[in-house]
Image 1 (cartoon, helix red, strand yellow):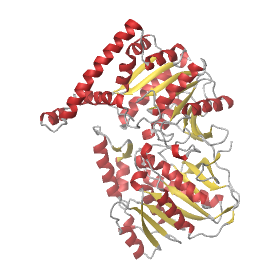
Image 2 (image 1 turned 90 degrees about the vertical axis):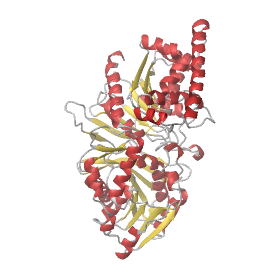
Image 3 (image 1 turned 120 degrees about the vertical axis):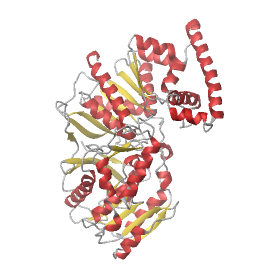
Image 4 (image 1 turned 90 degrees about the horizontal axis):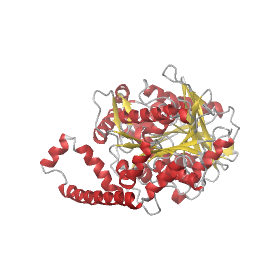
Length: 603
C-alpha cells in the first residue's frame, strides 16, 4: 500500500508520505514532504520538532513548515522523537538524549542513502533546535536553522519544573518532572542540564540561521559564539511564535515567519536539478515489542482512509492478527490535537487495547492533524462538519479491507461528541449491528452548533464550577484562602445562587419526566441509542463537568441504563479534562482495559 497524499490548496504540488526509519535498536515515525515534479534543489531538510507540550501545540505549524520547504523544491522530513507521538518507546525510557541524537543521525543516514550526494539542512524548533545544533557539532551538515533554540539545558529543565509546579499537583516520590501532561525522567533532566550550546562548535559547510521571536528582547549569546567561531550566521526576529504555541484549537500558523525561513534556504540553492528516484523502499509498518512477558506484540501502520488520500490514520493491532470476534475501535480527535491525543493518551489507549486483541484506528478528521481540508478557513476547528461522515468513511475503509464489520467509536471532549453522533446516525439508518459501543470521555457538550464558543459552554460553566468546588472543599489551602479573604467571594456567591437555580430546574425536569414522560433531548437520544443495542460507556474526570451535565439532563435515563447494563459510568478521581497527570492517565487506561477485556465475551 502506498501511503502518499497530495496536500491542500496552499501546497497543490506537494505530496506527503508516512513511514518508519530504523534508529538504533528501534525506529521512528517519519513524514516525507516533496514535490511531485522531477526537479529539486538537492537538499534534504530534516525538521527536528519541539518536545513535550510544545510538540503538540506546534504540530500544525511544523506540518506547514515541511510543506513550505517541499513547495520550494526541497525534500522535507519531519518525525516524532523516540518515545513521543507515533514513534515507539516511552518518555521515561533510559538514555533519552543519546537516543534523540541518534534519531537525527539515522535520518541523515537515511537521506544520504536514499538520495546519494544530497545536502543536509537541519531545522530545529525549541529543544529540537538544541539537538539539531548538537548534531551539527558532531556531524557535518550543509545548513542549520535554529528556531527559538534552547541554548542552555539547565534553563530548559528549570522552565519545565516551574511549569510542572504550576500546572498540576506533583505526586509524592515521583522520579520525573510532569509539565502540562508530558514527562521528563529525573535522569533525562540531569542529562539535559549538562547541555550548553555555548560550549559547542558547529560543523556547517554553508550558513546558519537563528530565528528568534520578535515579542521579547533577543539573546544574542549564541549568535556571538558562532560569529567568534567564524560561522556564516544570521539572526532574524520573526513574528507569530506565541500564537503558534497557543492551545491547539487556538494556534495560528506564522506563515510570514515560515516564508522568511524557507526563502533563506532558497537563496542558497537557486538551481533546480533532475531528481533521482529513491533508492530504497520505505518501511510501511512496525512491530512494537512489549516489555511485559506474555503480552501480545503489536503492529502499527499508517493509512489513508478515503479514496482521495486526504484523510489520515494510524492503526494499532496484534502483530499476529486481530481476534475476528472483536469489533474495531476508532478514536476520533480530541479538540484540535492530532491523532496521538492530548498528552499522547490515544497512543497509549491504542497500544493497551491492541494488546488485548483489538484493531484500533486513531484517525484525524478532515482539517485536523495530518488530514487535509480544501476549506483552509475551517482547518483546525475541533467540531468539523464532516466529522461523522469521516468516521463512516473509516468504517467503510476497514470493512473493504476485511478488517472489521462492527465498531466501537470513542474520544475525548469533541471526540466524544463525534462518537455520540455516530451512534445517532446508526439509529437514524437503523444499522443495528454496525456500532456496538461508544466510549464518551469527558464530553463538554452533546449538541455543538455553529457559533458556539470553543470554551466551556455557558450551560456547562456552573457545572464545571461545581466539579471544581467539589474537589476544593477537601483542600485545606482553599479553605485558608477563603477565610483569609483572598478568594473571589463575589464569584463564589454568584455561583451559589446560579447553582441553587440549576438544582431547582433539575428537580422540576425530574418531576416532569416521571409524571408526564417529558424527556430532555439528551435523555431521549441516549434511550434511542441504547434501544438499538448500542452500549454507552461514560468515562469522566471528577474535575470535569461531564457527570453533572449528564445528571442534569438525563438523570433517570442514566440510572435505568446502569441498572440494565446498557450504560456504564466510571469516574476517575482527581483527573482533569485531558488527564494531564500520569497517575490519572494510568487509572483511565486501567478502566478502559478492564472494560474491554470484560465485554469481549458479550460481543
